[in-house]
Length: 127
Image (cartoon, rainbow, N blue to C red; front, side):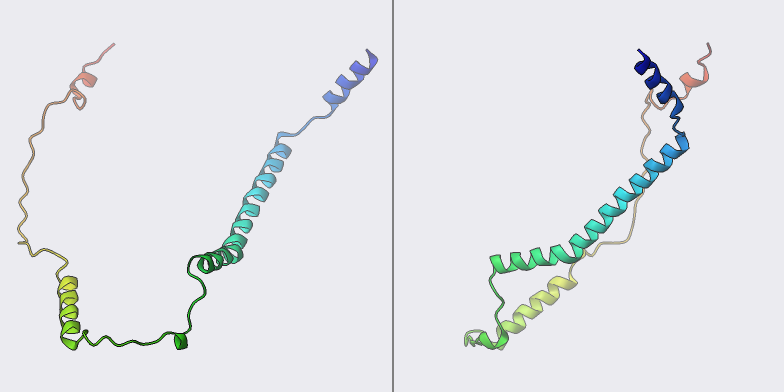
């Protein structure tokens, strides 16, 4: 019983200031946030390029050098075909928008009665 009374007295003597608890929570939260930001920065700076390089090696294989690529000329591909393709691309890129007249007609919409927007009930609601 004496041990229990001594324990109660020691717990009553340890008073924790709420401001100190707030500072502890503040420092802990800031530490967690900034540690996470530093960790994300390191991942994006160092680990992501390594993962992308590994993905490129796995999916495509090593890149070919320019000296390894052989140029094969297709004799059916003439200048007329190139001119037709470039003209079609030019017309497609310049014809993005429809040519419409610039006349705008604004019609006023009829307002339908709705009890949700009626202020009549709010004005005459006396208790």
